[in-house]
Length: 243
Image (cartoon, rainbow, N blue to C red; front, side, top):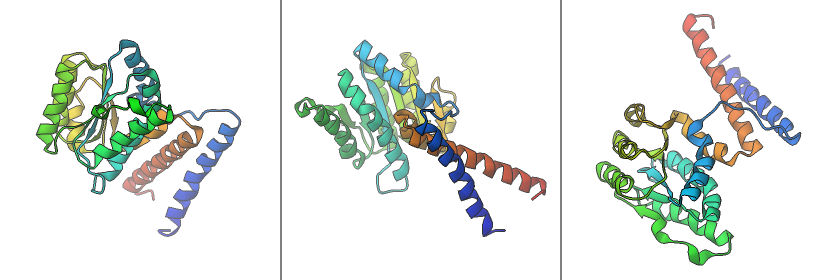
């Protein structure tokens, strides 16, 4: 049974994925549970263009190549899905990074976006700002941007700990709308009281797929949700001694 169970879970995960792909080819978009932290980002980008004030992306302190690599890559890919539209609107976001390995990757996102539009000369390197590697320094730097610059919205997605509360508090003080996604318990505990759309834990990794909105990506999320429910059910049955 121990050897059969992993294969059974894989088959069960593949079935909803195939079903979603078939429906997508028929023009039907998969229905998923709401994740406001990501679902409202395209609209926030449009409002940012209307107001003439940029969004601030806080990408955290996760070094690429370390134990927080996946979190930082998910944050970069989410921003990448919005970069073309931001450049087209003429209001590229301000990006705050706290690790040197994130700096060239974030810069490349917007360099490519301007190049694809045929105007590479319009790329502004100051769009991406390296704040500092110390958590308190990084959080204070982001809070200073939120407190003193003209920012339309705050998107915190990345690897932070308790210091994340300092940034969200600064945004709340000016009534700046926020979308927040974090994967660490220490950050979630600090962010939970914040006035923000919050994506919790593994929901952070759904960001690129939700923003892109492509059926093949949404299908994979649907399969993950089905698999997650199945695992929870198995744990529940095991706890009751039924299985």
